[in-house]
Each structure stands twice: as C-alpha cells, then as structure tokens.
Amino acid sequence: MSHIATLISNPKNPAVTRKAAAAAKALLPGAGDVAILDGEIASEIPFSPPANSGIRQLTDKLRAALGEIDVVIQPAENRRKRLFVADMDSTMIEQECVDELAAFAGLKEHVARITERAMRGEIDFPPALRERVALLKDLPATVADDVLQKHIRLTAGGRALVMTMKKHGAYTCLVSGGFTLFTQKIAAQLGFDENRGNRLVIEGGKLAGKVEEPILGSEAKLASLKELAAKLNIDLRDTLAVGDGANDLPMLRAAGLGVAYRAKPAVAAEANARIEHGDLTALLYLQGYRREEFAE
Image 1 (cartoon, helix red, strand yellow):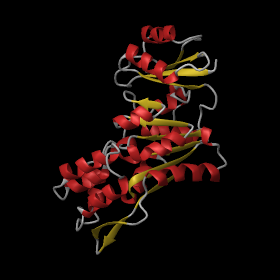
Image 2 (cartoon, rainbow, N blue to C red):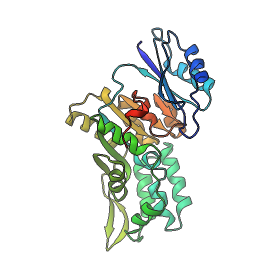
Image 3 (tube, rainbow, N blue to C red):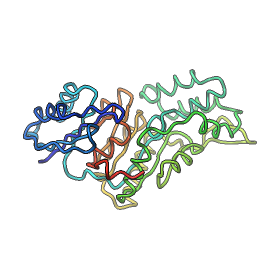
Image 4 (cartoon, helix red, strand yellow):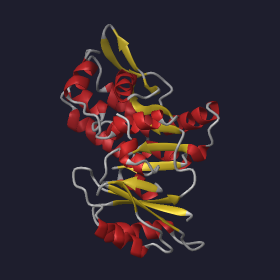
C-alpha cells in the first residue's frame, strides 16, 4: 500500500469508532485493514490511490463524512521523522505571549487584534511585532515570569509529543516569533533540545519597547528548519514542523510533514496536513506511533 489515511479524534471525545473507521475504509480505493493506534482515539488505514488522484479532495471528502475526526493522508514511507521544529504561541502553548504581556499594560484587546491580523497574514509579521512591542515599553521585565506562572497553559499532548520523538532518536527545536523570555522556559518544560526566539531589549529592569534585530519571522523559521536538517544530516523529507500562523507557512511547506495545528484559515487551507480536533499527540499518530509507545 502506497499511502496511509490516519483518523484522529480529540482524546476527550473519542470518535474513531469501528463504524467510523469502516465508513472511511469504504471511501478509500484499494484499502487494507484498519489498524487501531489508540482505542477509539486514533486509527490508520493503508490504501493505494489511483495515479494522479486528488489527495486533497479525498481528504476533504473523508472529513465531511466523518464529522469531528481529523483525517490526514500521506505516503506510507518516511513517516517517522528525525527532526521536529515547532512554533510556540497558540501551538505548543494555548496563548499568545505578547497579548498576555499587553494585558499588564491594559492593552490586551488592542494588541490581540494586531496579533490576529499578523497570524492571518493580513499584515507583515516584523512591523506588527515592532508595533506591539513598542506598546510594552516600561513594563517591568519580571512581568514575563508573572505571565508564565499565571496565564500560560501548555497545549495538551505537547510534552508526550516531544519526549516520544526524542525517545526514538529525533532532535527537537522550539522556534518562535515570540520572545526568549518565554521560549527558554517553555522549551525546558516540554523537553525540547533547543529553542530560538526574539529578544526583548531590557533597560534598567524594564522593557524598552524594542526587540533586537533581525526579527525572527517566517524566513528565519524556514532557515532554522533547513539549518538544523543540514547540521544533523537529515533529509527534509524526514522532518516534521507544526504551527498555526502565516509566519509558519514557509516552514510547513518545506518540512517532510508540515502540520497546521488549529490554524488560521489561510494556513489550514495551504497546509498538506491539518489538525483541528485532536491534541498534539495527533502528530505522533500521524507518524504511526501507538499509544503504548508514548513517553511522558
């Protein structure tokens, strides 16, 4: 079988029943037996599509038929990836750190609107970041610790994703358009091998309203993926990337498997794989991992 269709539901609402899997199998040409990866949470089905068949159209057809179940179709070869590069804000964590910082200046709604437009690709990321950071001027630098402790939540399944891939020999890197004040600590909590982000300028213990140049945006994320792959002698086909915003798209396009995770519409529309219902362990099921292989 040349391809695999992976069916994934939210672990809190298991929906990949035998009936759902059978319905999916009936729509897949030349389908083999259903393999259960995790109870009624995830299964996969091998199949062989006809030459020049529309994989995106088939994926959309399965999604429409199955309801709240994520469907990703990919080649059966090279599924287990050796390099994982992840976005942070609204991906590995549930929040946008710059928005949470702005809350301390009473500007969260204003900054969040700018963030949303940038993540949708409506405005360029670097000037949008400069504009938002300027509004943080004179906040105490210690506010980042307050945000981390009181307002940041790790996305479900994130640590299992990172630790399982590391257990099986993959290298992991958190690459964020956010700030190192956060990436360093989030990366440590989740177990990433390294992290990269933008550096806020701090003067006299306060935020100066500036970010060090050059700004880490979409091109830097793409460059990080390629640099790490070259450094580790890993083919780009053996890489996995995940993100939700427009500044993640170049990285997602270049990776062997680029996953749009609960992403903005323009990003989800372009990505070859998207997860809207499952948590981050979905990225393990996409690689063929079974629940008993997970590490915490």
